[in-house]
Every structure is written in structure tokens, then in C-alpha cells.
Image (cartoon, rainbow, N blue to C red):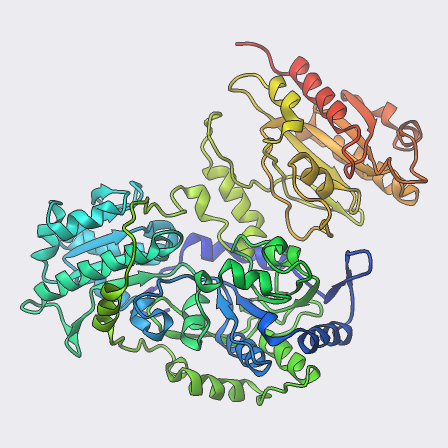
Length: 637
């Protein structure tokens, strides 16, 4: 609780996301074996493997990428380690414009005025942000200001419900030109304001044209700064705090403070030269192995089996924020301490200690052994990180503006709509949320019921059977590939079917999903978390069986019959895929049918011999599934 930040407020998402902390966790180190499959190993083997790669790969071909939830201690430890290998390739998943000074000037990436000062504001301009979803507690302050003052609010971006009235100015970046030229009616309100504030979502300065958009924002800031000099807007060192950057994640500001370069500086050319990539909790950028050198070795250190872990050759299990003492930095640049509530599960360890141990094995021993030692190191790099609870004043905002004006950029006109425009977008923004069944239920509840919706998001309900234990979640898959033309034709207009894809672990469910989606199946590994696609049909179950694993068919039979008798699955169509039929020694469908006692099942069912790897039998089996559901459930209007 901090009266200058959140008072006593906490968002529903932060309150109920905690169940994600005990699901899909990385509990032990894992290393890819000779078959390219991640398998458990001990810490000694994991650290020696990582150290060997650090020694073998040339420093220019080593890079680190830090994610959205990483603490300051882990950030400084990884940067120090990679710097000792003579590489400066340390990047954050956060992005920011470079032309105005980049990370050298904190005013380029901080909420330069204080969050609490929005209550003094009389004219507020929101650019490329939806604070209701990106920063709910900050949005509550805006609403309080709206209710108890005469604040004028303008929005450039998405026309959404923010819980208060505002003037919608449009979604295109050209609106900034209208504000600069005075064509917009909102221009006068900004110019006449006693305490103007511009709040920009970091999504607005990501992607193409970000430098041009930043230049326009800096020009508008300078214009308002000149008007504020004779008014009540307070100044620090002659510089009014007008322009403010609103971050979504707790790890980006600390990374920039410590010296991590923004993600937009990681060019395709640099990526292609990288042979050792160290992902520190990096799960949110759409990167793939093909972006990097063909021989890239990926180390993933984090707490959840999410996107980063799927890329990894080596996994080092770390601690979540509830399991370690650490420092995070908020969007104002305010250092805030967190304390452990529980210990890390399994063989997971505190992140900075993992890096410290790796440094010693690699021959680049880091000079700190305790939390006090590493915080002393933090104070050498960024002294404000040891002044807890204080938001340091940012200077040089005018210099940042001047640097931006000197840059040569091409004019741009593009949308400034943020990613989070609907409630369904709000719940699954990080690895913990994506592992949370509660957040998945929230997505389902907040999803529109319209059958014609253009896109779908994850809904996790259903069953994944691992070692004969059932863990609940759902998988949807969107069919856009040519091989599914027959399935599309079977769909009736404005009607859909839902399919539940189930089976024991290692039966081939992920390979099946990737095959029908047209994805590369050569890098398939044991699935961490939920494999997410989108299916536009329901009312059926696909049960995937490993036709080569005769020893587990009794378990498979028991789980299948237990599941299919659930009341919620009454009457569904059952498709059994005898998978891996292309392998020597696989059992025939008739043999599997007898062992599974399919004759006892009263549902419509059929078994097909298939290979998710080659695609054999998939079209025929899915075609039967669609036909059966169509004839049984769907009828013309």
C-alpha cells in the first residue's frame, strides 16, 4: 500500500491471479537430449551445460533478453555475467524510441509527473492506452479526479468504456498533427490548461513509425511547456512535467535503469548472428528459433512453462515474485521491495543466485554472495534503486525533446489503438495469468457470445491427462490451413462446434494440433502449460492414444471411461485416434478398440489409425467427426 501509488486499491486480476502460481511451474532443470526432447537433469548438469556454451560461443554471438516480470537483482546479475563475457547484447522486452536519447535519459521512459498528481490535472490527454485494462488502479485515480473536479479528458486510440466521460479524438496518429496545428477543438483546452498531462501507453511507440510518433509527442509537449511557464504547472529545473509514459509491466523500467537496451534495437541482422540466447523470464515477444542463427542454443530461466520455455534447449527453474526478496520498479521509477511469502517449489531457486552459481562454473565469478552484496552493486549502477518508495525527479526532458526534433524521421500515419481493447484481452497478459484457471474462466465469461466474432482468445476448461492424473484446461484451435477445407465446408453458417482434445501425456496431442494448423512439428517438445490454438466447433471429444505404448493402455482405458461418463459430456461424439501408426510395432485399431472396451461406450464413436507426424488418417477422421456432429446436432435454420 502506498498513498502515492495505489492508496488501498488492488485490481481484481492482481487479487485472483494467485492460483496461476501453483500451475504449470518449472520444478526442475531440463536439458534437451540427443533426440531433441527436454528431459529432467540435476543442477550440476544444467549449470555445466550452460557454462560450456558460454565458454564456447564467441561474445558477439551471445545475447540476453529479459522479460516483463524480472526483478532488479536478477537483471543486474545477468547483465554483469554477460558483460564479463565481453558482450553488450543485453535487451529488454520493453520498447522505446531511440532518437530522443533512448535509455540515456530517464524522461524517455518514465511517468515523469507523479501518478498522484493526476488529481491536480485539469486537462488530460491519453494517447495509445486503455488505462482501464493496462493500469486499473491508475484509471481509478482518473475516475476519482473526474468525479470530484472539472477535469477535461481527451483520448487518441480506442473508443472504449473507461468508466468516465471523455472527448474521443480518433485513433490515427494524424490527430497529433491536428493538435499541433490547432485544428482540433481539444487544442485550445490543452493550451489553456493550468496543469496539462499527456499519458502515453508504451504500445503507441512500438512498431513502425514509433520515432515519428515520438517526435510529434515531443513537439506537443514543448508547445504545452511554453504555455505552462506562466501558469500554475510546477517546474523542476525549469522543466514542466507534461509527457508521461505508462508501462504495463514491472520489469521494463528497472531493465532500462540498469542499462538493458530496448527490444527494438535487436535488429534482424543481430538476431541472425546470435548462437547463445539467454531468456530471463522472456515470454511475451513473438520470437522463434528461426529468427536466430540456425545453431542457436537457448537457455530459459523462469518460473512457468510458457512461450520462452517452449524455445529452450536448457531450462533453469526460477522463483516467482511471491518466493523471493527482490526489488521492482514501477512506471514512475519508484523502487519497491517485495518479500517472500513461500519458498520456491521443487528444485526452483532464487534467480540471481542461479546466475551467481552459473558465473562461478563458467569462470566469470560475480563479486556478490548475499542480498546485501548484490544491492550494493545495484547502488553502484543505479543509486535510486536502493532508495525504496521514493520516486526520483526526472530531468533533461527538454533535452530529450530537442534530440527528437533533430532526428530525421519519415512522416507516418497509423493506428494508435492499444492491444487491450476488450475485457477478454485483459486477463492473459503474462505467464502467471496464462497459467491461471481463474483467469481462463474470466476470459470465457467476458467473451462476446456472437458467433460471427472475427477472432477468439484462449478459454481453458477441459482435461489434460498426465501420468493418469487429470488437470483441467481447454484447447481451441482455429482451422485456417488448406488441409481443413473439408471441415470448413461441413460447418453450417453461423453455427460452430467445440472439440475437446484429450489423452495421456506423450500421446501426440501437441503434434496433432500443430499438424492441422500447418505449423512446424519438428521442434515439438513436452508441452508446458496450455497449447493454444482456436477451434470453431464443439460438442465432440477427440481422444488421442499412443498406439506404441501398450503398457499404458489400461490407464488410458480407465481414464477414457471415467471421462466420457461425465454428465457434461453426455451425448458427445467420440473420435479415438490410434496415433503413431507410422511407427514399427504400433498396434492396429481393432486391437486398441478391444483393450479400450469401446463397445461399452454408448456415444457415437469411431476409431481411426492415424499419424499426427505424417498426417495420415487425419482428414478422414476429422471429416467423419464433422459429419457425425452435423447429422446429430446441427440442423438448417
